[in-house]
Length: 234
Length: 98
Image (tube, rainbow over all chains, first blue to last red; front, side, top):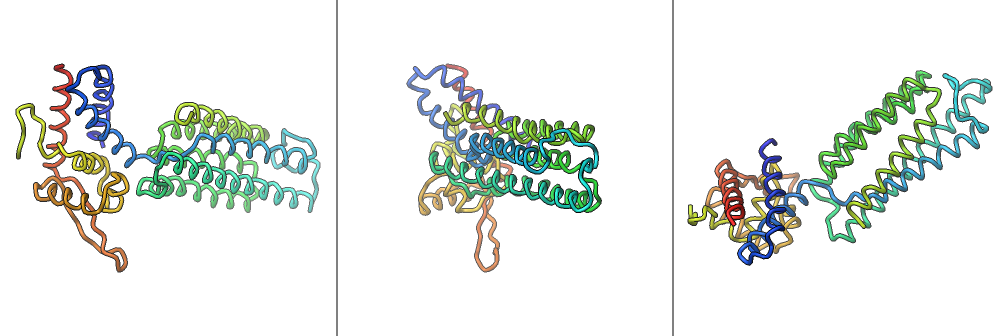
């Protein structure tokens, strides 16, 4: 692995050096050689179809989901007392839990769907294959922490620890991004680290769960998406 | 091994072979179809270059079955990796000296 990083570094430096000297006729062949090495290494080791627009739309969906939760299910409350039970009694609490969980699951499904759509669109546009050994590795590394998180959240739910559900979502999602980031743009790993930090902070202040949700799944995603779109797709 | 005065390896003069080696340097192993997709070459073309790399002991071929389908995968050998690095070093030297 160390060697590979070293080779990568050499290739990039060389590529740059050659670009500076393109006026030299002799270098034309070497430039083309290096361009091929760089392209093949990149395309066979990184899943490059991931689109910045996925981030933007996933963020918007998360914010919309939060708005639905606050305005419709929680009667306009944003800050929740631990236990979420204040002002709700008996059956009402039960119903509220189910509605909020359903809301979160819907957000997740829509966000994944839209990411898939934009990735597919980008791969067609750039003439890249979507199903490659790398994209499969990317998806595996993404899904393992994510499914673990999903099961863990289910356990939290049945143990009535549901003030930890939003922090757990952010932490496990962040870990999934850190792991999968090795197989795509490295910025994905940085986003993952920020999600983990947001999740841990949310665990310290569980009453502000919805605000941390909006920041982690909404603001961070939209910012990341816009940066990525401008950097790689415009 | 045919190595020119500049240190560039003749085997890597061909761009398909250069591509195969690049892909195998950063992947533990790749099967025939993945290589074909990555490099965008025809079956026959890829097969002949794989053959020559194998004959020169730069890559290793392993055949196994996935279910009932035969699957051939390729990986780089120690000496193949060494030669590729030397080729890169030679490219670096040439570019730096100009």
